Image (cartoon, rainbow over all chains, first blue to last red; front, side, top):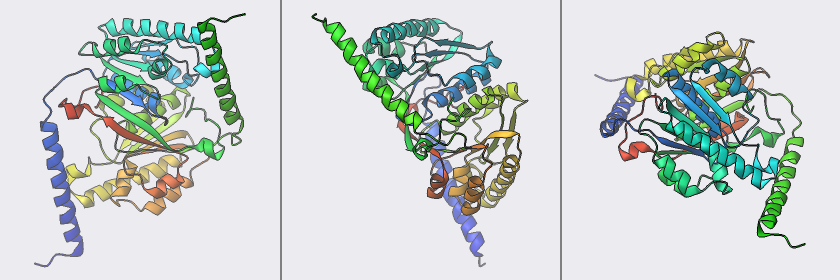
Length: 206
Length: 206
């Protein structure tokens, strides 16, 4: 029986996809560790590091999890998220202890104090058995400027409860942080509307 | 007066940050286009493409915006987001028209039909003046497999209302899509716990 060109294409597509599915299934079957609190790092100079952390938070909230957020650097962008998460006040514990980007404050001693307060709060939330997901926003920046002792912070993150997922954001993640992490995504800027003279947009950037 | 080492360091930090702030301020001042609905693309093989789109959605909801989501490929991961966004049923319009990843369905004709239904729904939401942010989840995959006519889709996205932001996700974004976009972020996988034999984690991956 002679097959039409369409039939041949459909068959070829099917065979290719069947092969791909077999590979996927084999990969899933190879996983043996069922439950583990992940240390997730979002780094790189592109957009979306904190935004993807809030996306994870939204998912976790959908599972009914209690979640914590500690902001090591006050962004000024968080108006939208704050208002939205007000609908989850039963589940979300949000703490902003940073004082604005370090190039805004121009006061190293104050930044160091703020970072340390934020880290104390982070440890408190890590110890709270109710919390299942903790976002440590811009922790990488605090570490980059040596506002906090890197080895202590990484050791504490490694020693997290097995049922606690932690998301660390901020560009220039330290190699020690990447080493300790289970999942690291680098957000790379391919193209930006600022280059075309477009201002930061409400609802998108803040 | 002789300054202590600490004073010198504090001063150096302050000068460096003052310079950085001046550069930032100059950049902000250079932006002249005040409002523009952005076409945002999240691509790359790393995690966080859809997650960051949901983070943007959360922010937009915080501003009280009506938002739409069209899923071109049914992920199976969306349980958490669905449950969370139930708290925003006044603002969110969610449509899943895809039939699962193409290597799951192994039926090209059905995938093409599903992608076309999704695109019809997307155009409907683009025409709704209430909607301020629209997520076209995995549209890049539908385009990659030629389920939809690329030039028509890109032309429609370019012709969007000036007050509508659109977020397109999916790996392998077409060059034409990147060309049309205002903001493109590539999510690159640096490290993944699957490699260490850890299963997909509830609340994190689905």
